[in-house]
Amino acid sequence: MLAPISLLILAMISIQTGAGLAKNLFPVTGAAGATSFRLFFASAILWAIWRPWRFYFQRAHLKNLFIYGSSLGLMNLTFYFALERIPLGLAVTLEFIGPLALSIFSSRQKRDFFWALLAGAGVYMVMPQGELNHATDPIGIVFALTAGMFWAFYIYFGKKAGQDNHGGITAAVGMSFAALVAIPFGVMIDGDKLLNLSIIPLAILVAVLSSALPYSLEMYSLKKMPTKTFGILLSLEPVIASFVGLIFLKELLTVTQWFAIVCVMLASLGSSMTASKKY
Image (tube, helix red, strand yellow):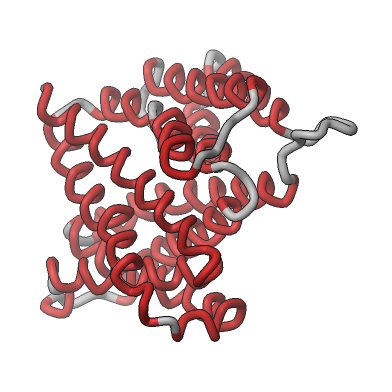
């Protein structure tokens, strides 16, 4: 069990390191431009690995893949918009509200409403309060919560799409739809910045760290450990993101923001530990 646990933690570190590197791209490419580069190169890498052109897709299957991929693209886009305005750890924490809400409300167990209240308390803590000097950017909060909503869609429709096709094929085609959704925003918002070819090596590194590598590690770990254990360990992601933001981006969080992160982590942890069959 030690190997899959270690690889899952490595996958989370990889994802958040990729996000940190992507934030460093924002001054050059903009958030929409960075999203476009990441999804384009991630799609190219997954197509090279899984070669989905060898498979035939029925129309119904393509519909699920399109919704899954569109959710993935909009999730990445709104998350990067949030990352422009608020610290990485806080953005990941607020994004967690989406899948957590999906898990809680699809369960309908009475105890899950406690986890919902705990997560809600965490969100309340980071909302701008009066004249506080360190109030979190409200637009960043909205973008992070919106990313969480698309993350919930991504999980729900990803499960449907995954039932129709091999996991790698689903990821490759879904990533292509994600890129097709995000790239028009990149062109409209940061079009001239996309012509800067000098940032392509860093953009490819972001795509590998944020998509190709962690996806492979997570798939291996999920096959080697119980789903509940996987969910419990995934609850560590907000704190991992916070430390990556501190180390690589020098993002210092307030005491209140750390309390908010702990509330959401405990809600996610509790929901995973008490989980029955979800959605």
